Image (cartoon, rainbow, N blue to C red; front, side, top):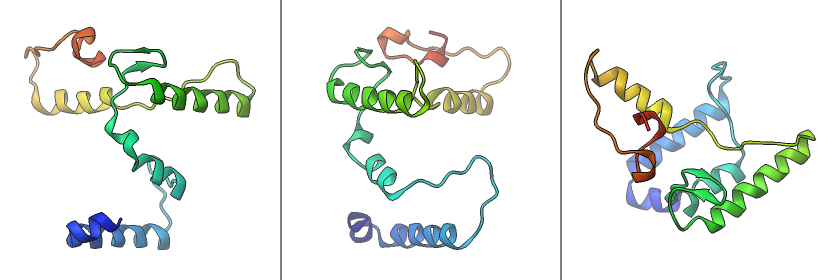
Amino acid sequence: MGQVKRGDPELYELIEREQERQRTTLQLIASENFTSVAVMEATGSVLTNKYSEGYPKKRYYGGNAVVDEIEQLAIDRLKELFGAGFANVQPHAGANANAGAYLGLLEPGDTVLAMRLDQGGHLTHGS
């Protein structure tokens, strides 16, 4: 957080306040989560820069060799943990964001112009 503190002290202070609120209150909101420091560090890493649509070794964009290894590691660990033959570690993401945009911006009968999935479009664009 040193970069944030130096670059935007006001934002840093707000983040610190939220961290204190989370440390000192009990949240009973089912959709909220508390992650470990290790998870927060990983999500703040260079992995955040990478878009990896698809599954390991079946991506729609290049440059995913390391991401594929990371995802496979997570899959293997989850399968071992639960004694399962299969596991999917990918979270929901684009679909929820697109649904929010559609519901907030479109009227019944409106048309959406979108690219096919293999051209960079998203599954929720009708690909």
